[in-house]
Length: 136
Image (cartoon, rainbow, N blue to C red; front, side):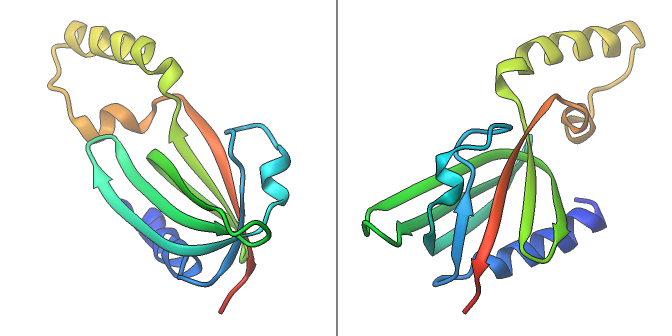
């Protein structure tokens, strides 16, 4: 994991502490109604996987008290343009098969070994947004 990702990951972990209020985009790359709904963070877990980070957030809708679990798989990059906003760049699984086939052919033609981390580093991504509305 690179230093920039590690720093922004630590900031995001802190901002996803239980009790903090967040707004999440449900559909990548598409602003929608969900981004206006306040959720209280119950728990957040990160795991490193073969194709990026996996973020699971357990939330409670502040208005209805409904419980949700949001999952962001294959996070390659976290961008923090301000101290209350994060963009998660996740592998776009709808384009992954095409990317894997093209990349594998390139590596075979060049007779190079496949480095799994770098293999996915340039995969097509989609962006999700997390807004931190209040911190405890």
